[in-house]
Length: 463
Image (cartoon, rainbow, N blue to C red; front, side):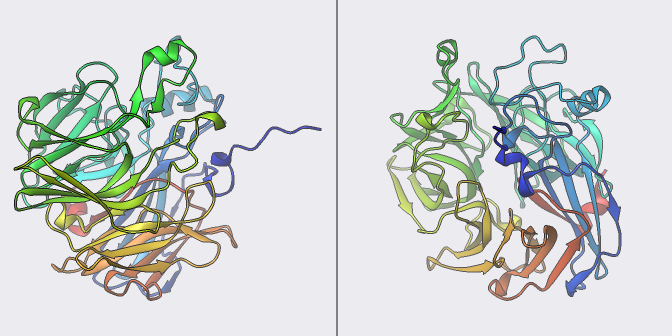
């Protein structure tokens, strides 16, 4: 008897959990720091129903997993992001949309695609938003994690909204972009510290590309025109519409923060792909970008012939763009594969000495065996290992004081030996030590994408 192959993104700790629960007074191994107060929230894909057709990890409905920490105690809750698509499928009792590996459903009466709001999170100007780069963000109520609905900045939002907006910690303003597959292919927006969408300007690209992240410095914004391209002619030939073109160069565009297409400068480098930015900042005439770089990506490849054996292996790199003479220098910073890079958000866009990234595990599926703490000035690093059979996710920084690494690093960790999950909290200044606290979660937390730490002060200002 021949059985259908199990989709790896629906198996093990990628498999969804479908029950929304609330639990107080969680068991803690170790001790929560008395001055740690706020909420850790992580977003990720969690299909409500058995998917239609081929399922990709990017397709699942967004689910938020939150741990509230206060006075040395912790509580947990998980909630679906109540998108319009989720509500329709909830009423239908089945999946209505197929995913990225299937042709667009042009005959679907509810629309050709579903905004799953499953990728990342941002807090700005009292709003907490669940993000997905193909559409509008969704406003989330804190600490309840209930969904208010789509948020369109009083009707001013006219483009998709990146999963990785950047909030300047010094000015409070937020920058975001939206890419599309029709000219000009990119729009760039700024939001005031008070939460008003001030302006959106077009940025012209030669063709449509999948642009997942970008960067800011004190004075500039950096876009990445990388060769994961969208080509409708390929689709007409029965080939993938989205494909990595390894013979096409990569381009980095640098524009003054409040500039437009007329002000942008493009720097060309060898072909590569970048999912996530570590940080960017200025040093004299140079703009410095640090990110996890891959030679290529197989992210939407549907068969082995399309796959690059050396693709999808990310390493930490640095680029130095000289704004005076137009030169660019590219340098590999580490030989250990790593992804999901983060810094102390209080230093975003400024020169940073420290940063954190997930240490990639072995095997064909994305997994993280630990957290690497980078010391960029010396080129050294230290690693917090989760332990045998234990795998984590994106680690975020919760500040304790004004020092750049003065605080805690935290992430969900899944123990495959016990089929259990916990929130692991590590002293950032003693990264190789045992966790200061392990908060045991009363149900399994599937692997997901991006997380955020919402401080007590931000919780009090949330609306």
